[in-house]
View 1 (tube, rainbow over the protein chains, first blue to last red):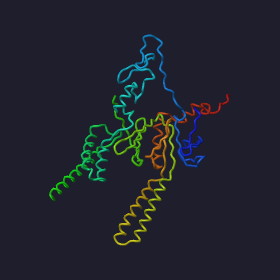
View 2: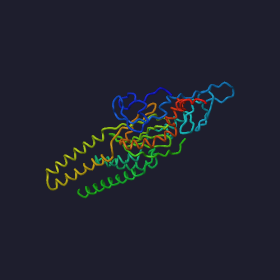
View 3: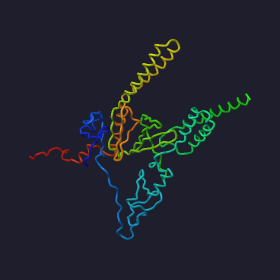
View 4: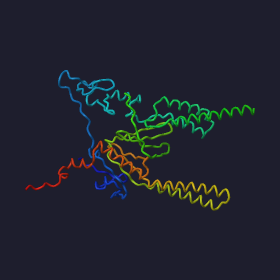
Length: 192
Length: 172
């Protein structure tokens, strides 16, 4: 076990081991702030060093596509290229090469690598509701809201489960706004 | 390379910021912290194998909120007493809304700050702002992490087998 110290989240001073994993609040001896600390085995493991690629010693052994002097240990599940231990990336149980992982990240089809997404249904609802603040802009934002709401049905949405309520609501509000404008136009024409 | 969709379960609670709100989800092998703005979502993953520690620290935010509700209630009640007729009715309705806010905030329990630590970052889980909820979540999280990492007792036993087996027993 490495010599590691659990620190108080408030004062950053060491918390005694006896105060951790008690399942209850305990007071930090340094700052006297109550804190519940649950420490898991990963805390004591320290940093793990990645695998080293083996150098080819026998002729005829398959080599890595990216490092021709390194021994291939697996193939990429996407492109099939042979990979050494260094180039092998484990993504949710499948093995891919760095190029495929990068391409997948750019195209947004590797869920594990996604850090953000545009959610068109939220954008549509924001546009529809935002028009209430500055109502004349609704003539532009209402059609845009409808467009984004329809777009949200075709594009990948949120990573987490959500209903289509936002898009339906956005369409409904935007249609009401457009109807309001149409009514206003009719009234103005009648007046004139 | 499209992988099957990951199923997430929402952890109750909503963390609010100025332009962003955050929610926490539990996946098959990780926690997903989702930060949402008006048009986008950002994702941070905490794999169970990487979570080193979780800290919960009580905060005074709930008491401040209660003080604000109580002050607003007091002011609305003063106005309701001072004015008459329709004004008094409106002021009492407003006062009752502040009273409702005070009651709801009190019933939700004390507030806290919850932090999750990995080897490279310590992140505040702002959606876990209530002590009861944070402690309940921690109770649910511990077996999920133990399934992957084992327990700290097992780590201690591996590091110090003599202590685990006890003192040597003298022979006959």
